[in-house]
Image (tube, rainbow, N blue to C red; front, top):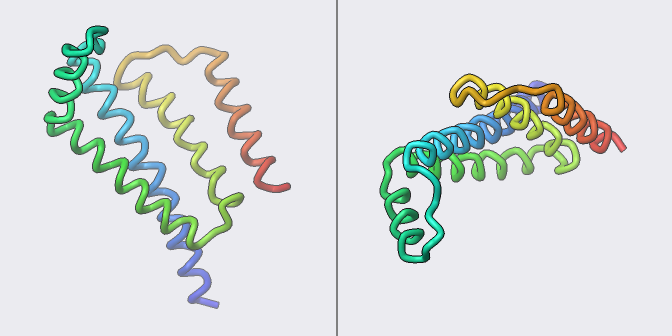
Length: 129
């Protein structure tokens, strides 16, 4: 029994890691892209922009975050059914909304809140069917 609880706890930690590292990657990428400016339209300038971004240590850390999220997700789906584990990732919608308001001063509107609630509710309902 204790081993089952430990395995389940490990699965939830993997899910939490997935959400955390996904959010980290998105927030860092938005921050660095915001500092670099919009991606140019011309192919050569766009290529230079991409390589400049890929050389940024913070962007690299965001990519590492995405990779760590992938590894955590592998652990999560090894412990739980996909249809059970996946709805937990909807926490990232809520947390990105909150962190984007805090770090980037993006507005939290009623429609955004309603959309996040509907997404989370739909995923929870879908996982129970």
